[in-house]
Amino acid sequence: MLPKEYRTINSLSGPLMMVEKVADVRYDELVEIELSTGEKRRGRVLEVTSDMALVQVFEGTTGIDVKTTKATFLGKVLTLPVSRDILGRAFNGRGDPIDGGVSILPEKRLDVNGYPMNPYSRDYPSEFIQTGISTIDGMNPLVRGQKLPVFSGSGMPHNNIAAQIARQSTVLSGQETFAVVFAAMGITFEEASFFMEDFRRTGAIERTVMFLNLADDPAIERIMTPRLALTCAEYLAFDLDMHVLVILTDMTNYCEALREISAARKEVPGRRGYPGYLYTDLATMYERAGRLKGKSGSITQIPILSMPEDDKTHPIPDLTGYITEGQIILSRSLHRKGIYPPVDVLPSLSRLKDKGIGADKTREDHADLLNQLFAAYARGKEAKELATILGEGALTEEDKAFAAFSDAFEDRYVRQGEYENRSIEETLDLGWELLTLIPTRELKRVRDAYIEKYLKPKIKQDNEGKAEEAVVQNA
Image 1 (cartoon, rainbow, N blue to C red):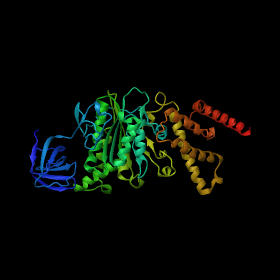
Image 2: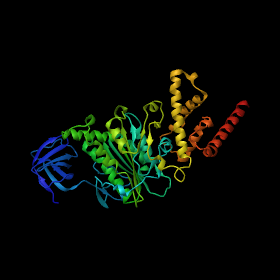
Image 3: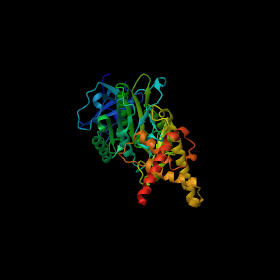
Image 4: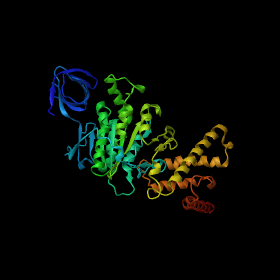
């Protein structure tokens, strides 16, 4: 289709431009806007009527004179040039390199809107991904092809957790080529510098592709950033047979940009002013994760969003929870205690955890240990609440043991260093070590065989350590 040039711009509204008297224009078509100064901007068709086209201008409409500006409809959609050389590179929200490197010499150009996966062709997620973070690996395991969001809040260290997951994540088999696609939307320059410097310093940049949209970039670029990232991930996963982990942060900024564009279009608002199609829009991105039959590659997603006012019923976390397979929730109370990462394991959930753990995947005792740790921590929190109301004297000896376990669980299991990478074996062994604080008769969610194999040696080792310490003190 040949480019078509028009000088019939009718009006401007925010990042939107109305062009009239157009013909043969299609939805999502790319537009080149040339100002009288010679400056060129890009846009795409958002809506088409019989003879009018509504265009989103990527760089914004500031400085555009409707009388002297011309719009050229290019007859093609927005594409991302991809090749094997894309690994280790950083791009902005338009797909342009920002790392000082040369432009990508493409093997192919892919439509950024992607193609929906045929449900019949989907393969079920079943392989464990090790993030090196105990509260995820041990309590809410991530499985290849899963969508597992992180629900955070303003001022919480979700960016640090995102960087840690990107650095440390790996598949245990070690046979597959592993890559990370990292997309950041609406972040500050300081945050962007943190991510780029951290990945370069730790060497993670070699297997990472970064798409960074800054807070002062146009809102329309924020809409395109995750789509560029997912298009890149699809190429790496299904063309190059890599396993790809996609981290999207912060989805709240993306949704705010979507609301801004919707308001400029004068659409009827839905809940809290967000467009009524917010669920559908989020689903078009989240559902691009998964595995395909006959393909060794896969896409796993970790969307990160900051809940406004820590409200889990806000439309963004609420709709995200419907589409994805669980959630990792960060706790402000743990954050105030200085615990990193402040993951609250009680409301957190990985709906596919049972599919990715067990013998030949993590370890045979993982499922039983997970359930016992969860139950013990929940009972310990209840005992501490009871002590606050009635006093510690009202607690039984068992309650006191569970309360002590609760504190130790937070201090030793949940708390870990930002650059501490725990293997799944270390995480599981730490869990058994903590269970020595609880009378064995109270361990009702683990099999006796596992108690004999994993717990008794820990108790014996603990008793020997105490005996040696007593001898030293007496001497």
